[in-house]
Image: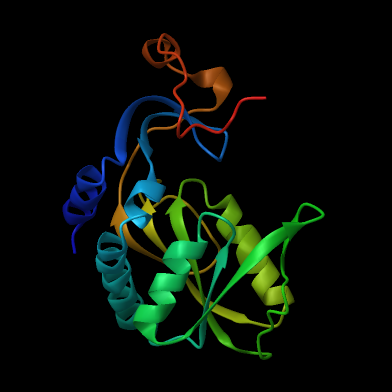
Length: 193
């Protein structure tokens, strides 16, 4: 599956949006990938995660478990794990930090692939990886449906992306005038409080 094929899945689900959005990273962008519309369609989600599972196998072999950050990574993490035939767990924030909860445990030294939905800066991926390592797992790779950093995000381990896009994004104090002239859109944007 190519990056164009992935974008076509997003278009088909009405999930490729243009306008002015505030991403979960806090950056502003003219493009938003509303991945939840893609993940709401089981067949579409399965196609994407099957292709991602194949990329993972080719890059690092079969992990023992896939672990994702809650909430956005749970569905692609589960489906990718299902395609790989391995367990699926997730970390949640507790006291501002990701941690395994709900009785989830991993064996010390377990080979783990951290699965995300979309990577922009890599911050949540790095936080998730740190939690996995703290729990005793060996993170052999990170994986995502879309790396929207154009390959620039550093997550600290090899990043396996189904699609790599170079989508512009700016901090709030550096928004280009043409984007600043467009009101921030919702749904999709981080809620501005």
